[in-house]
Image 1 (tube, rainbow, N blue to C red):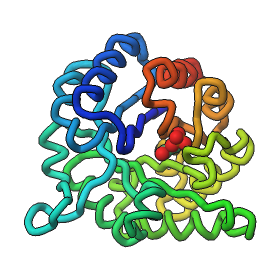
Image 2 (cartoon, rainbow, N blue to C red):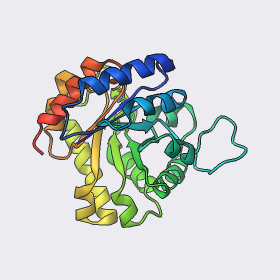
Image 3 (cartoon, rainbow, N blue to C red):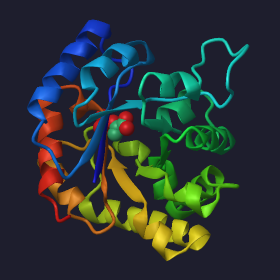
Image 4 (spheres, protein in one colour):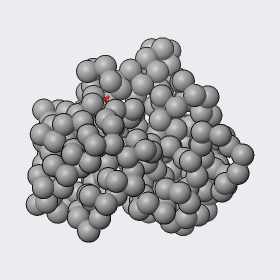
Length: 252
Ligand code: PEP
C-alpha cells in the first residue's frame, strides 16, 4: 500500500510545517503503509526537516527533466533529491490540462527521476467525455505506453502508477469500487503486456479522485488497488489519517 497526499498549490511554508508536524505525531503507529506528503516546492526543504527520521516520506508534485540551466521557473530532479524527496508525481491531470504536459514530457521526467533513484508516480486517467465515448482503454493504453517508452523492466519495476479518472479529481464524485477496479485491472494488464506478469504484479497502482476516509476502505479492498493519491482529504490530518488507517487495515 502506497498513499501519497498531494497538497497542490495550498499552504504557505509555516502552514505546511504545521500540518507535517501534526501528521508525524498522528501517524506514528502506521506500519503497513508506505506514505508520503507532497507540499509545494517552496515548503519541501522545511517539511523535509520535519519528517526526517519518521515514517512520513517526502514527495514532490512535479519535476523538470533537465539537470540544470536556463529553464526559468523549473525545478530539477537533483534539487528534489537533495532535499530528501523520494516520490515525484508526474503527469497529474492538472499538469496535462493546464500546463501542456504530454506523454512525451511524462516519459522524460520518469526517466530522469528513476536515474536518481527516486520513485515516479505516473498519473493516468480519462476525462468524462472519453469515458462516455467508450475510450477508457484507448486513453489509458496511450498514456501507459507513452510513459514507459524506452524503460527497462528493472526501471518499470521501480515505478508507481496512479489511476485518476479526471472526472473524479476534486469533484467529490468518486469512481465506484467496481469502476476503479476495472480500470486498475486494465492498467495492470497493460504493464504485463509490456514487462510480463511478475513486474505487473509488483507495481503499486494507486487510485486517485475524491478518495476520503468513508470510501477508502472499499477502494483499497479491491484486488488491483494498492493505495491512493489524495488531494483534498490530504489537507487535514484527520481525513488523511482516516485514509491511512483504512489502508493499514487492508489485507497485506
Ligand atoms: C489529486 O489531485 O490527485 C486528487 C486525487 O485530488 P482529490 O482527492 O481532491 O480528488
